[in-house]
Length: 405
Ligand SMILES: Cc1ncc(COP(=O)(O)O)c(C=O)c1O
Image (cartoon, helix red, strand yellow):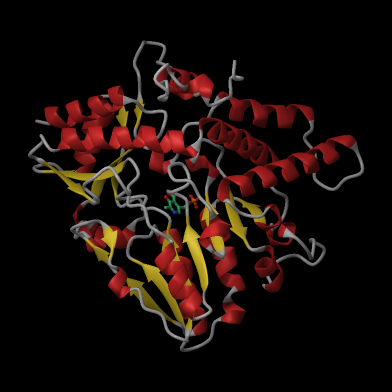
């Protein structure tokens, strides 16, 4: 008999994800003391964590809490743990362990990286940014342009499809950076990196991909895709609050980050200011184990079923407008909707009263909301599923939307 892998433990007899077994790994998904089940459809804002993550963080603090690079066992155990998680993170991102930088969150890592580009960008140079990005992949480049005198070139969003208009992706000999999303945290649109990488390479520019929203949903292959720098946030893929930056080690070595003098001059540690959150790194390791155990293909297949079910249900709700891709392919199960006769915060409050957690507003996706004409209009309600959601969750959200007075 074939050995039971972590993935097979989560599959039912038809080879599909057994949602109850998945949920059993997430303590926060258990029913409340009075028997209610919360639908955590706020996943694009942050996912729940597995008991493995909680245990790995506790075990680190309990058993070998110490600073790094010391001459005693607890410190050596910390160093070994960090090395192991670096290797696992590189596997997850399709990247190299020596290029993995741990940080507080994606935004802080991106600002830090953007400052290191000051020396590479000059007046009259160009930075490409998109109207589909979260502002953490826009504001740092606006700041870089302001500091250096560079100009921004925008890749426009087609509001009808929720996809980027690639005709507006233009580069020149002055382009220094092309920043783009792996997927939209507002509309769920998945973005093919190839045109961005091709355009950047044709003029020797760097590519910077915000994979925060893509990471829990889409397999990533940074090196194969030729992406120079990729950032993501483990708290969006079932881990603790932290950030990851992954880059070609040669690029990290070439650039000069802000750092204190005695900090290492080589390797990814050179980019990590101060002491790392080691317990969070231990938790990242457990989150990566969980994702690797389930498998991104299994996750993708399950999520497409959820997306199709949600889209089919929405088509029967006349008062609800979906903003973003209208089919289940090329998208994550993240949906931005508005409801006739209600503000988005009213809808989110109605859902919350039914134990369904969602977001209302722009969720820092300022440019997408502006392109959709919703920025000054209360934004949209964002309903976001991940692999721990099932058909029952989708149906509860649809029923609640149908019941809006
Ligand atoms: C697509 C996307 N990019 C960037 C960020 C910012 O990530 P962090 O909170 O790790 O700074 C978020 C957070 O919501 C996001 O969804």
